[in-house]
Amino acid sequence: MIPSQPDRRGYFGSYGGRYVPDTVFPALDELDRAYRAARRDPAFRRELGDLLRATVGRPTPLTRVLRFPAGTGKAGARPSGGTVRRRRGESRMYLKREDLCHTGAHKINNTVGQVLLARRMGKRRVIAETGAGQHGVATATACALFGLKCTVYMGSDDVKRQAMNVYRMRLLGAEVVPVESGTRTLKDAINEAMRDWVTRVRDTYYCIGSAVGPHPYPLMVRDFQSVIGLEAKRQILKEEGRLPDLLVACVGGGSNAMGLFHPFLDTDVAMVGVEAGGRGPQPGRHGATLCHGRPGILHGALSYLLQDAKGQVLPTHSVSAGLDYPGVGPEHACLKDSGRVRYTSVPDDAALEAFHRMSELEGILPALESSHALAYALRACRRSPGRVLIVNLSGRGDKDLDIAGGRI
Ligand SMILES: *Cc1c(COP(=O)(O)O)cnc(C)c1O
Image (cartoon, rainbow, N blue to C red; front, side):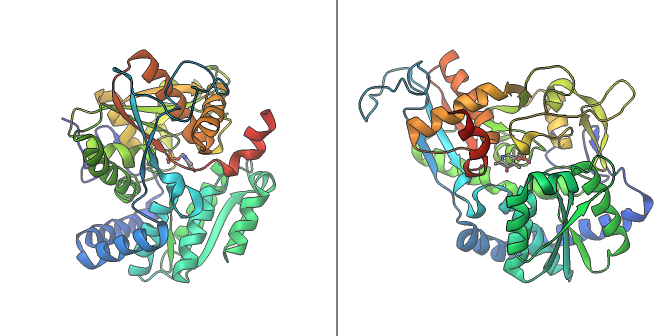
C-alpha cells in the first residue's frame, strides 16, 4: 500500500519530516494549519481554479504527436510527407502541454497556489530562493498579480550566470538579493531564505519551488501541481476512451512529475521518472539523485541525496538547470522504494537530441528538462510499440536557446 498522504509528522514511508532548527517549527505548524483549512475551503478552491483558468491558461492541451515517435531516424530524417499513416502496433504519444502555461512552465501552478495562500494567511511579504531563476520568476509573477512584496535570494554566482532571469524578476517588481556566502549557489540561497523566514515569520511567507523541503511543503506543492494529472486523466479518457499505459516525466526536485503521477497512483498505469544523467554516472557529473544517491538530509527533509562517503553533498551537473539539484522530493523516495514508480536517467546528449527532434518534427521547442522525459519516451516507443503514453512537457525551450541553439 502506497501512502498518498504523509503521516502526521510529514513522512511518506520513511522519507520527509522536518529537519529544521526548532525556531522554524512554529512557522511550519502555522503553514500546515493554514494549508489544511484552505484546501477544505470551497472559496479558496474556487478562487484558485479561476486564477488557473484566467491567468495561468489552464486547462493546458493534451497534444497527440505523430512524427516525433514515428520511424527510427534521427531528427532530419523526417518521415516523408506531412501526415503519418497509422500503422498497427504504433505507439500513441501525447504531450501534456505545461509549456503553454503563463511564463512557460509548470512552476506557476505552484506559485499561484502558494501566493494565494500567503495572502489568505495575511502575509504581506513573500520570499523565495532560486538557482537558475525559474522559480524566482514564477514567484515574482504571482506576487505581482496580488501586489505582494517579493524578495528572492540567489547565490551571487547564479546572479551573474542568469542575468536575464534576474532582470525579469526585477521587472516584475521583486527584489533580488545576491548571496555571497559558501559556494554562492542555490544551497547558500536556501540557507539565507530560511534565516530570513525565522526572523520575520510574522509578516513573511516562504514559497518553495518544488516538492521538497520540510513538511508540509512536499504535500502542498504536489497538491498544487496535481492539476496536471487531473486534467491529463480527463483528457486522455476523452481521446482514447481509456487510461494510458505509461506516464513519463522528468525529475529535478520532482514537482512536475508528482503533479502528473499523483492522480494515477491508485491505477495500474506504469510511471517512469527521468533524472539528469549528465555526462555520466561518476560522482559530480550528473543530477540523478534517485538512481545514484542514498538517503540523507537536505533542504529540511530526509530523502535521497547525492553525497560522498562522509555525507558531504556532491556537486551536480546537467545541461538543464532545472534538473541540476542534488536532492529530490521525499514522496519520490517512497515511490522508488515501493516500486510503484521506476526511476531512470538520460544523459545530456540524448536530451539534446530529443530537443532537436521535437523542434524539427513537431514545431515544439521543449525545455531541456522536459527533453530528458522525451528522450526516454522515444526509446520506450521503439522498445515496446503499441502503447498509449503521456509525456509531461514541463516547460518551453526558449530559455535554453543559448545552450541548445549553440549546437546546431
Ligand atoms: C524547474 C523545472 C523542472 C524541474 O523541477 P521539478 O520540480 O522536478 O518539476 C522541470 N522542467 C522545467 C521546465 C522546469 O522549469
